[in-house]
Length: 508
Ligand SMILES: Nc1ncnc2c1ncn2[C@@H]1O[C@H](COP(=O)(O)OP(=O)(O)OP(=O)(O)O)[C@@H](O)[C@H]1O
Ligand SMILES: [Mg+2]
Image (cartoon, rainbow, N blue to C red):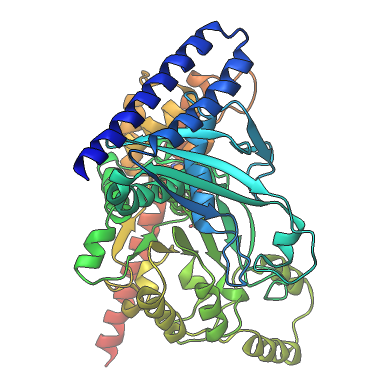
């Protein structure tokens, strides 16, 4: 048996060598690149088949649609397609015939989704093993009999990727390579996707096509252009990175993969801007919850359940949207309020309005706490929740305790380091004689980064760095005087109160 086995391998070897020699001769004599490649591809396939006599090939087929009547586009297929985009369409791509499709709704409207054309084949290397991917499709079935592929499968071509690999690489391919392909494919899809900004605002509460409506998220702010103390900024970025890379850590310590951030500080210090920078840094979607538009606690829960992984869920101005007694305030309906102000306010109409509000929204503090805790433990991972507020002291400690809001970040008035960054971003200057004056005035003036940025913005064609900085110094002087005046007034008022209290004591 052994001798027969040797003999069989030997003759296969001779056949292979002959094929290789004949192939080389034909190859060298062929004229015309297209023909050469066409024949090359076919010969390589046949050569592989011949080689399979001594080391047989195994295959794995990935179909475009999952079976079982679900008719969902298979995640694995999309991941393989994304993975192969690099190999087939990238700079080193070996495939000449590509297929171009319109990307999924909401993706970049200018882009085309390129993939391998039918019957194209591409080789890939993984830890010293070579594997081959073949793309092919089958025409729709002609009979109308109910089929495994369902109605969509009958109308369109059925498309597949088939992976060929050698028997001796079975463990490597099935155990590691396929997981590697899916992982890498997901990373490519994530990189290519268009991020979204979701909102629950739709006038009448809920949207026809679900609880969220969305637009493409294209906020230009990044940490590079966010002005704040550099040490603090680095701390936040490190914290975000640790969160993003912390899947194993969170699993090991048995915590849900979630993190809460509380951003607090005066208006115009960059809280909303920070949320955009966070989303850009992490490449996450943003869900902006307008609490005043949520009617009940269970509606709030519904909103959360509909959020996806890799997202930031934001509730802005939490102190204004939610009264800690559980009643609601009317904050953001500015336009409506202004309109109402113009009307004469009668006791009857006020009463009616209160009734209306009571019916319109019943989200309570405990509802918010429950949703956070429920979200923390129940939903899949990688979500960040951010609350912003101008009045951290007004918030119920239960709402912002560690575990709910893990990291508290104070956004404060503009410091000199932050100003330098703004001067660089807005004016392109990293030093100037007026910097000294700005450095001295900033700590005494309490100016927000929003105001500094506004002063540094050229207002006309004749404005340059000199004039903008001079204007800023002037404004800083004014702000300093205003602050001193306010402090003095507060002091006088305080003294007055003290004296009045002392007089009362004397009378007694
Ligand atoms: N730290 C900052 N760095 C760069 N730009 C800033 C910063 N803070 C504010 N700005 C600029 O000022 C504008 C207003 O800032 P932003 O909306 O982030 O303030 P906010 O703290 O959210 O205010 P509010 O409390 O009123 O919501 C932004 O459009 C941004 O351009
Ligand atoms: Mg804001």
